[in-house]
Amino acid sequence: MNLDDVFGKSPKRINAEDCTCHSGGAEGADTAFEVAAARWGITTKAYSYKTKYHESLNKVEISQADYEEGVEQVNKANRRLGRFGISRYMNLLARNWSQVKYSRQVFAVGTIVDPGKKDSKGYKNKWKQQIVSGGTGYAVMMAVLSERDVYVFDQNIGKWHRWSYLSEKFQQVEPPLITENQFAGIGTRQLSESGRAAIDSLFEKTFS
Image 1 (cartoon, helix red, strand yellow):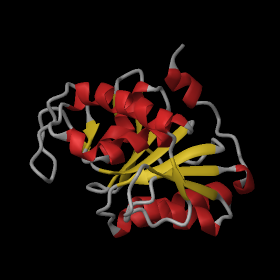
Image 2 (image 1 turned 135 degrees about the vertical axis):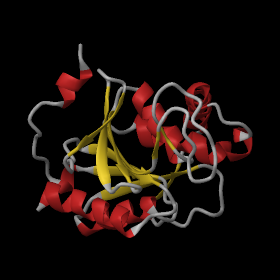
Image 3 (image 1 turned 90 degrees about the vertical axis):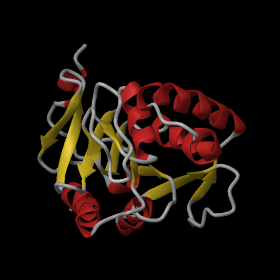
Image 4 (image 1 turned 90 degrees about the horizontal axis):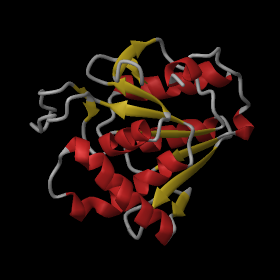
């Protein structure tokens, strides 16, 4: 089955009150998704695991089972991302799995990095396909490996992209709609004004 054909069907309209936004509660894009969701009466679950720095009012502490499952999924994603020293960030990275696990559609704000190129912090993409920079890259990679419908707003060029399972790369698309009741809204802490506007527009376009 071609997932591009499945995800390419005419978008269905959904009601905000039937939706849940799965996120992480971090400053930047996570918080912007949470605020936008609240504006439309949508519940957010902001996942956390054993940290005192999580300040979201919608905090959900993940179970030990989900954490352990998350560790496995992070390590699986890292076989492509090829990053070092991730163990000290595992509490944050493993909770990202819950954002993906409980969603059917994933919306992320960040930066897409082409193969062989470096991100803004100088980290080189050694994988043969495009990735997303930073910690957001783990959630996006886990979503791709789990065959979710994945969108990324690239702040560098101010455009939405969708992961194609046919070409195995991000393809630039028109601003998307939320079409699944269970969706993830995640992204970089370094949220730009264009990124914030893209998040607000996503909800406005879907639910207005």
